[in-house]
Image 1 (tube, rainbow, N blue to C red):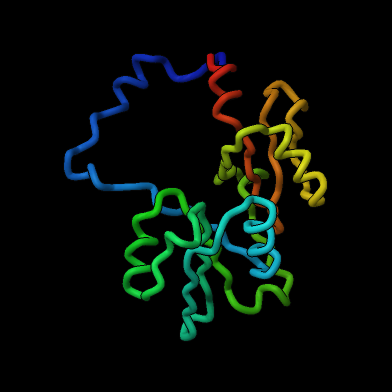
Image 2: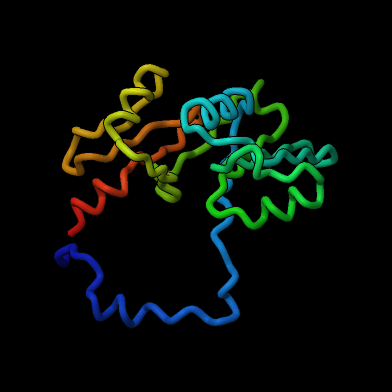
Length: 180
């Protein structure tokens, strides 16, 4: 077996192209995660992570609801339907919590991607101070996967939401200080 090593700088450079001008107005708007019980998930994302419910959509015929979560002031969210949808679709990095009705009452479990077969890994939340955030999470009885002083990567933490999805807690200041 050959030695494991990262992609070479030359291979990386050959794999990247300059963005097409046609994509200049594209944004990474959402990451969708299925949730079993929206009551638990909404509480977690608002109370623990400080997000706000930006917009809810119910699809009666298909028996599911979407809850778009993100960081915005309440006063920024338009009140009208068309205006709020247009505004929502222009927001960067929202989390779309998808609830298939009835899953809160059955044995449904969602795969978080961190056990085999691996796939999706986590979302990341940048905070001013990882240690202070983790003290707060501790008081809120949040489940930790990794605390900031555990393991080889110091200064970052991983917590779990009610459905077992991993959330990385990081600080721009600490990441920059530890940049390789």
